[in-house]
Amino acid sequence: MHSKLLKQINSRETVIALLFLFPVIAFSAAFILFPIFGTFVNSMYRDVSYLPRAFIGLDNYSSALTSTGFWRATVFTLLFAAVAVLLELFLGLLFALLLNEKFRGRGVLRAAVLIPWAIPTIIAGRTWQVMYQYSYGVINFIFTSSGVAENNINWLGTSYSAFWAIVLADVWKTTPFVVIILLAGLQAIPGDLYKQAKVDGATMVKRFTKITLPLLSPVILVAVIFRTIDSLRIFDLVYVLTGGGPGGTTQTLSYIGYQHFNNDQFGMGSTISVIMFAISFAITIVYIKKGNFKKGIN
Amino acid sequence: MFFALTPFLWMIVISVTTEPDFLITGNVSYTFQNYRNVLTSPSLNFPAYLKNSLIVSSVTALIVTIITSFSAYAVTRFRFPGRVAIPVAVLALSMFPQISIVGYLFRLFSDFGLTNTYAALILPYTAWTTPIALWINMSYFFQIPTDLDKAALVDGAGRVKVLFKIILPLALPGVFSAFLLVFIMSFNEFLFALMLTIDHSAQTIPVGIALFQGIHGEIPWGNLMAASAVSSVPLVALTLLFQKYIVSGLMSGSVKA
Image (cartoon, rainbow over all chains, first blue to last red; front, side, top):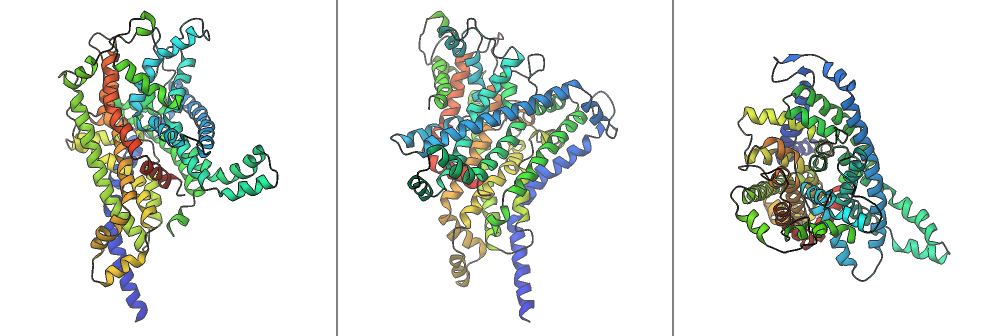
């Protein structure tokens, strides 16, 4: 009798719970899950404006995997993500450590560090574009007038400098996010640990490597995974700064996916999208496994 | 500090000078004409972009805040199958690159005649920003003792009433930071907005700024930077004003794990 009653209450709770969760589930299913499924199906079709739509199995995949444009974009995307995330992590840790110290004006600095995060990426990209401008951009002005460079550098015009131009703009835009996350991690470390270590005569370097780094490593991991997933899908900065150029050398996977869609090549665009999805999925699995989500809910 | 501010300041400098090449010509003259242009010139459509961005972002933030409040209440107050799996699955979905769904949505919205409407942006933005808001709200709701709800329930209040009269007022800082983050994320989004809208009747600020072209090929930097400044200043002001909420939102949205 008692257990039956409990069951009734529980099933009533389940109904209300699912009712409360319904909008969230419906939105996620309709506008993320379902489209991903549809994209997967589309990736196996020849879907261009000038020919009838036809099922072609994995043909899109084999033509993607044998095209130089795809591999160039893959290499560029991976290289960009690796370099950008490393730099962001290094700078983010440096700034977080600085902002964790007590000094006058810390509050103002902590606020200022958020400004790049708040500015839309497209607007940040446009601003960097005018700063990189060849003949009168402020960066070339500083380089030439300080004697670092003899002549103006065509920042966005050569593939090598364009890579670094995009990296720099991205690092500027997203390091604040890393700083905030790491700062939160630093503040969670009990100050007593450092006091004790000081009493025991541990040097600053030792305190950093033996206390700060190990205790901060879960937070660092979260920051790295978030930033990696985000930088692999880079699109906005490339669109504004280089448009994939010069000569397609700064195209990213998102960018060529977009170009296919934009040129009415929906099958091929979907194929690129599925490949990107697979890469993110693999990283997300690692994240879900590493992040202790169950503990957060129970 | 220098690193963080320079580009923003440079945007302002360019926006108030008549010619962007003053560094090499040496002729600096200041003007507000660029601001007057972007705010009044009918051909630039800037006020329309701004209006679209504000409407899309506010409506998205409002919807997301409401639906994730209900969901977070369910996850933190009820025991049911899927209590852990659903929030984790929703979070996982948001990790996927936008490009992997935008092509399909383009087709879907074309079929339903939704392309180039506010709904074409609000619907996917809602799905996209739900996870972070859900996790922020959950982390705040967990901190409210369940005894408070139980007392109200015994007094005969319904679940919805408990959520609105007890939980939401107590979790207001969390709900507010979720609202702010969703607003900022929607305001900044570009790829969906680029593909799912066609003209200034639905295009948002990022699209307007990205497609901003001069009549003669050369980019009108003064106008462009004035438009950028007008669009960034509200976001920067919001961020500085509500820094505490944004930081705590970012933290509970990602470090919670």
